[in-house]
Image 1 (cartoon, rainbow, N blue to C red):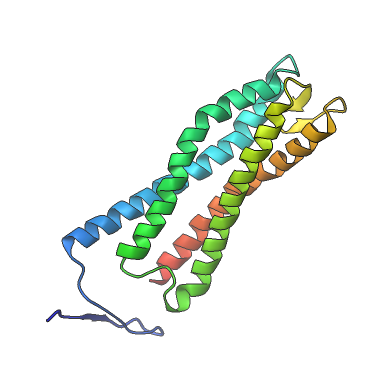
Image 2 (cartoon, rainbow, N blue to C red):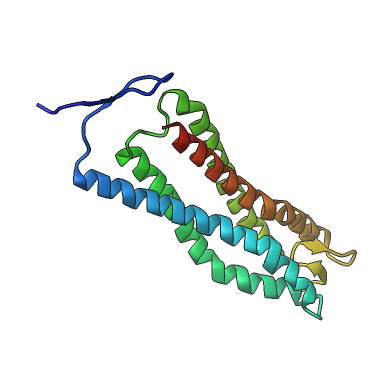
Amino acid sequence: MVALHTRVIPGRATVTHAPRSRRTRTLAAAARIAHDVGLAAWFGGGAMGAVGLNAATREVDDPTQRIRVANAGWFRWAPLAAVAIAAHLGGLAGRTRWGPTGPLIGRDQPLAVVRLLATGVAIGATLESGRSGRQVIRGGDVAVATAVVPISDTPDEIAAAMGRLRVMQWVIPGATALIWVFDALQDDRR
């Protein structure tokens, strides 16, 4: 028979659970690390791209080469971004499976739902950035102000894709920051 541990938290429900094995605690820690490191890289890459890479293309003298320079940076980042997102999502799944409590428990459920919505927004924005970026690349070497700001000579289709990129470059770090905020609030309630 397994002994249950009961924890009483004033003003909250009583939590009863079986003690976790060393293996389960190790898996939970690995899941937390993957979740947090993946999220940090996802946020950091998006923020650096918006603040650094995309804005720095203004420094390229030839306006027809600005997109090419930005794309060179984004192509180098894309594989790491994919690994970061996979680590975050894998860590989230692992935390749900091996963590001390699942992400949708009791009064934490509203926070967990908002956190999952923020994750969905971040994933959607990342996918849209990739789609719009490929559309800009297909346009070739066209004159632009920066990687995400067209000029009057920029073809309409490319300018529209750049407009979406200009928005998504801020949605990605914003949504990933919200995931962190809600994760911290949820952890604080446990």
